Length: 246
Image (cartoon, rainbow, N blue to C red; front, side, top):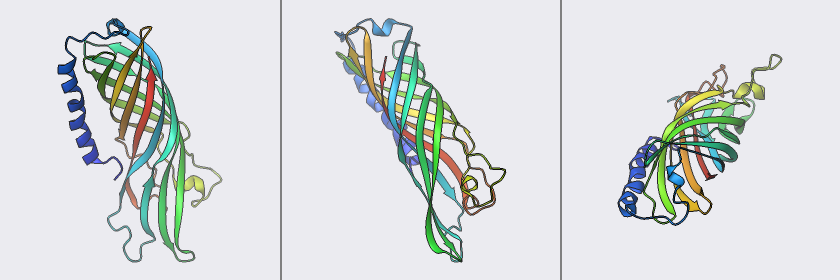
């Protein structure tokens, strides 16, 4: 399962182990670049990144049994693009509060293998194009600086709005593309991430970051057809790799 519970548990264990050793090593070190950067209350910047949006899918326990119309449902991750605006508030020496509204464009896919009386066994891929607005509020736990670098971890909550959500067509029919897969445009969930700050001259920095998103809501609209009835749960998942400039 893409980014399942085991992955999430391992990530929560690993992230503190990245920062704690650096905290000890970094005590007393004086970075040559931007020495007063962390003393500012606010920092602003922007982020650019690539994400891989996907689903966590729960299916009926009888899926694929003899005589069933739907034999399997698979989810596929595809790359997308994201751009955001960074607002960072200093909470203390090692903690910051971050708000990063982000626009992201991408496609998620579900692949159905079906056995229909007139068509036999076929594969039908449903691509769900999305234009997403992410509104994450996160806490950043940063290590002490050594020279011009330091690692950090983040965790927080995120509200997500899908602005390209498929709507029901008044003139459509039950098997049209608009009816096969429709999602609730609203979602919220948990974000966790890790990154590395690189301090530059002229009191600014660049950071490389990897972040995961785990949606809490079941976002699927069920409309009594073979594409929705055999799915018991459909949650959003995402991995984002990006760079921030602040």
